[in-house]
Amino acid sequence: MNWMALELSLKLAAWTTVLLLPIGILAGRFLAWRTFRGKIFIEAGLALPLVLPPTVLGFYMLVAFSAGSPFGQFYESLVGRSLAFSFDGLVVASVIFNLPFAIQPMQRAFEGISTEVREAAACCGLSRARILWRIELPLAWPGILSALVLTFAHTIGEFGIVLMVGGNIPGETQTIAIAIYDRVQIFDNASAGLMSVVLLLISMVAISATYLSASFVGRRHD
Image 1 (cartoon, rainbow, N blue to C red):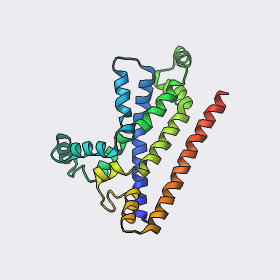
Image 2 (image 1 turned 90 degrees about the vertical axis):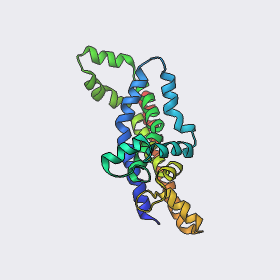
Image 3 (image 1 turned 90 degrees about the horizontal axis):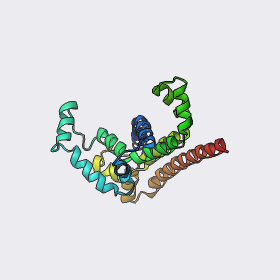
Image 4 (image 1 turned 30 degrees about the horizontal axis):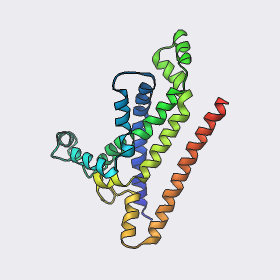
């Protein structure tokens, strides 16, 4: 069992989930209640990682993160190290790749909140910030929880994006999914099987949590 790879995967998933929490809430809320020209193209762009092969998206991000790109040069001048083939690069790539897993469930959760509830809260004198904190977030939390769980689980098992952007550097960019691939390549099926079971259990727990939150929403609306 490669505990270092598992720890790195959990760390990557945790950072990705934390960073996407405010992004998902703000973007999901905005898309749920705003109508404007070009909205469908924004939603399509955010959903693109769902259908685009991870290696393709990973290639474009690797080019963008490289020292030869303006963004890569800016980051390197700012922090003193390259964004490509680093843990920082994995975090940025993972956030981009998991945008639809975070935003779409939250958007659906905010869409399920009646506009009359928000209007009534505004008539009572609540500010927009208080409406969000006191009304919207408590009503939308099952969808937010589902988004966070899906993001966390998806990040732990991601392979293509991690390999393209981070490579396979032990202790730096080698996640448990890549460690499994390495074990299979040298016919160490026992280690690969053990790590696969760990990922299977994590995924099962995550999916169960998602269904439990959905069941809670169903009972609340009955």
